[in-house]
Amino acid sequence: MVDLLKLSGKNIVIMGVANERSIGWGVAKALFSVGANVIFTYRKDRSREKLEKALEKNDLQATQIVQCDVNSDESMAQAFKTIGEQVGVIHGLVHSVAFAHQEDLRNPFVETTRDGYAFAQDSSSYSLVAAARETRQYMTEGGAIITMSYLGAERVLEGYNVMGVAKAALEASVRYLASELGEQNIRVNAISAGAVRTLSAKGVPSFNTILGQIEERAPLKRNVKPEEVSDMTIAMLSNLSSGVTGEVIYVDAGYHIMG
Image (cartoon, rainbow, N blue to C red):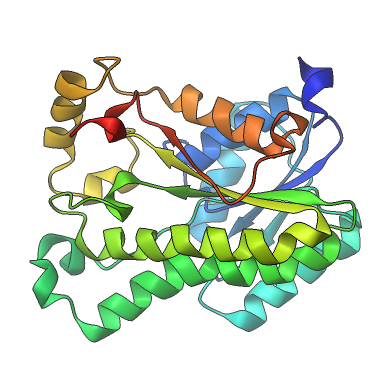
């Protein structure tokens, strides 16, 4: 299976791994297990510290750990320049970045502030566009870009509010990027993960209610495991999905198909 994936020795950048209780960290561990060279970006020093502790704890060695502020074009450009100068070729990018102000998640959506709306869009959606723009010049052998979405992009989920709108823009961006980058043999897809217990999920007031609803109504009658999201991400980065681009792949125990 590892040979079929063809990810051994490939250079994969992961953006947004804040701690061990994140989808991005699960993807990173899966990439290490198939022999990929894993490159991390981080925003703040405390995130780097947590990341380094997690790597040491799991006896893993990153190829690079590079500072990158997704709200700054200059920081993004410098980060990918640093990565490209060391590894030469980037084969894959995992965008697992989403930020919104807590008050814009807790308050009614109609009370979303202008600054809060812009911040959520900039951090959670535009950051994918900027990352794709910077990484494409190093994807000289083709590549795969994967971002993380959620059902709140197309349905109203209580407490998701401004993040749902940002995820909707993110999924639209996937389609436009896929259309433009396809001629460079760069595929762009999104993984719409079911409700997974991460630290970020704690910021959604209705999260525990959502977990219960999924167990009751999803075809598989359960919530998804983090490993299932990681496995699908690996598949979408790999040779197994060479003919797939511009798609939103649901890993949510089938919950999204229910009326």
